[in-house]
Image (cartoon, rainbow, N blue to C red; front, side, top):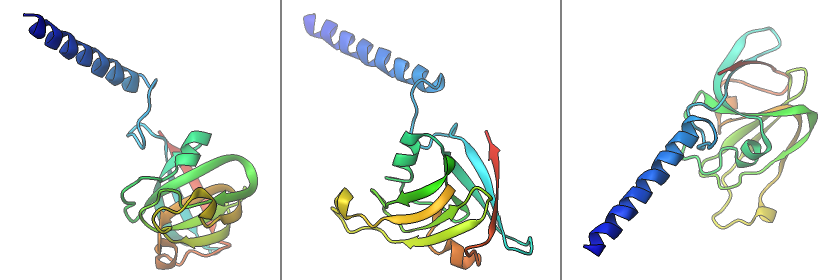
Length: 168
């Protein structure tokens, strides 16, 4: 009899914890990585003539925690998608490929919406320490990460212009 009571107490406790987590996520008190409610932006890249070269559906990382985590531990990034890192002001930015499983193009964009630098970043070898990660630097207010080869495939180069439209 006592063992059945113990089982019901454990089951009841698990149900309460599960319900609390679900309520917390639904109320926005707890977040899940890359949840459906994460802010998004449409990033349109054009050349100097105004010809649209590409449009990227990007998840927005605009808090220190989101910017630090970035795409770490993301399994894949489909073509035409990316992550837009948003900063309060333009400055020298450094990015690394922490816990990445696929290569990226890292696009640095200044406060005027002009691409200042593009890096083609490779996946670091397994067990690379934080201090051994290759730093990718550039002047930017925004940084856009897209799948490796996306910039070459769409003829995106430094000097091209970027327009960002935020969506909820």
